[in-house]
Length: 552
Image (cartoon, rainbow, N blue to C red; front, side):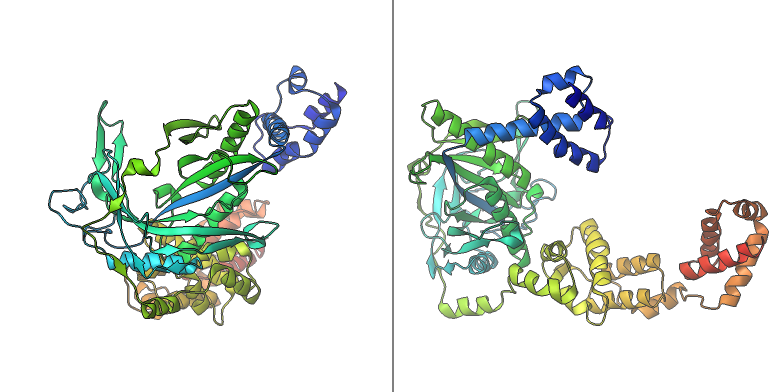
């Protein structure tokens, strides 16, 4: 028990929240646990086990159990991504595609399924879908057509979904995973097809007991469904694939891919097979509506473990649709999987076929930006940025181009910092995208230049940014003059004001002289207030300190 006592005494308060100390429990102590042959119950008899040690013990034992359980088995994984397009209007109507406005305000008779209302294809959606398949190295189909997928549910007002099961707009393509994605090897994941389809309405539960409310704002919003080939082997690969899709589709302006908003929803098909068998020999189960990268990883791992356990018992895996409970880390049956004939697919008679010529495809291809991988490989050495910096900008359409125009002749780190903190902060507050905001590169660079030359303070620079994003058209110099923000560069004038402040606050001066050096901040604040923020903070601090020290 001496080993256990040593482990716990090294430990650390049971209420400790220090990440570094928790990491210590997750590494060295676990190795000692392994070699000491102690059980967790033996450890807890010596006193309350620290929470970090408890969590690390669970992780250690579950990882060891997983290694033993999955030995001799492999997984086959395919993903279906449902991506909401950044189109202003819905796929088959002129109604606004803004689904998060007051319920049932953005609805057309075609979306609501009124008899006699005919769908009319939105060409913007076709172009966005075509951009996506080209960016995925696939082929735009010069002839594509729509199908009706029949099923009845309260959030499906037509009684069927208009989709492209048999003649999609895109086929083929691939996504390569590698070192930039956090993978130690190169993995190519093929794309089976990319199809246009309608979104369903939103069902709202729990408002009135026994009733389900339906919001039709989302009904008919344009989606693309991207179906991968079953080339994924692990949960980590699945997560990297989805993350890379997010970055790519945001970068080319096809979707914002916000999983928390439902703009990107993921279904995963999972099957397992024994080493040496055909990778498609297992029975697949579909995990529906996985809404975060963390949930995708947990659900895939849980389903792999479940299927292996079923096979090891000598039972057969049933084809079915399952959900994931993150709290218990288990999957559960939602329904038995319908086969294709259950949907009674038929050609959509009210929407004509889409015919695309080669010249249109060529023009569209020329509008695609540089790939995210090429952008990262070029920008990191060129501007001294790390991968995370470039990935952050890639997540906002148009941001890398904005940065590269703004950084000419300026400090890349300062420009990056202002874009990712202040500009992104304003965009989030306004629920805007950079490309649709009123902020221009010249306005932004005027702010950076004025700040670098100490013509304005940081707070004033933030105020100017807000005004520009509100639509202000005057220049920075004109706004500085209008606000009376000209910086006081006359040290003599600042000294006069500073002496008056010291004379007005003799008690604070005495405290400073007795060793309370933090009182300097009090006087600097007073000086900034007296000058309406027109003094340079560093200059104000230096003058105040000099005058205070002179009174010793």
